[in-house]
Image (cartoon, rainbow, N blue to C red; front, side, top):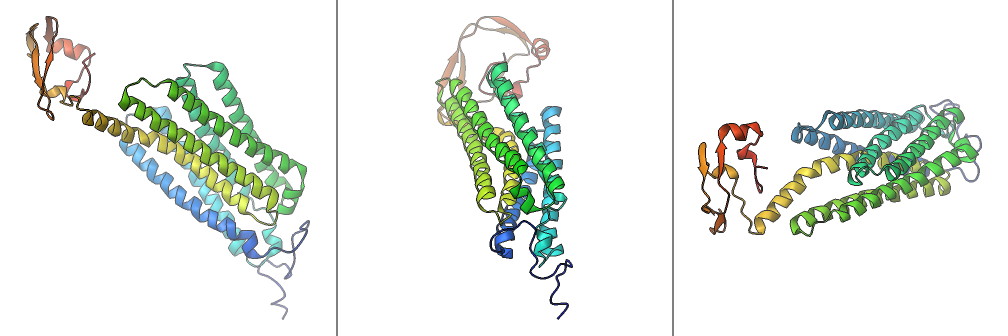
Length: 352
């Protein structure tokens, strides 16, 4: 009987965390939602790794800065996932049946939160840089968004520190400090995500040219930006609501893990979508009946004079002849190589 009255963690059966008010929560209420969200975050981590593999395989010529950014995100994502799994193991295995132990905040919680904030900083920094480019170096707009990102991450870091200093979940929920840092940080997260999405949509919309294939491409980018920002914004709001309402559950912690995974996937999805959108635009050119014959199929003399008479070109699909009038000029192999033009790689355009 003495063994039955104690738990694996050494605490007496029925012991509850100090500061817990109201009915004692069941294990399902306390950890059920957290475990479901943990499984979802692990799936998203697998998608992140797969997207990183595709990125490095598809875009080897990207700049070192962007490739290093992806590497840093993957390292932080791996740390974030490992600490999340440690949290789950601690609460479901190490402290199995010990409600008093479950009420303590394990050390990996703070590490997990800090790594998540660093991921947010890198990903939103990437989007702020995009705004800087699309806005043609609008320093006021970019500075405002960057300031919002830094303040949001600072509140997140402060929340991470409080998980170590307070030590238990009842204290964390009852003290004023965590309420200020968590609620303000999540509110800023939703605001900054929405602001970045709307700014990107505005500048992409302003960049429409009236040319249908290009405008469709811009429309796809606008939809992706808005949808990504909206999803993460909604999750931030849900985290805030569950933290304030479900006081005897760790469901808000699981949602934080899912949110951080969405940041990483949005970054990699943005970079990997370039190839898909480029192929989509290429197909729209083809379907519009335009000449898609590579310039490598056009025979130029290695040295000589291009006549002023029209040059007859025949499209591969429609079979129609296209007449190109060109002024008399001297073209040599050396002149082409001087300008670094690779005719075999050119498509849809001139050698300029």
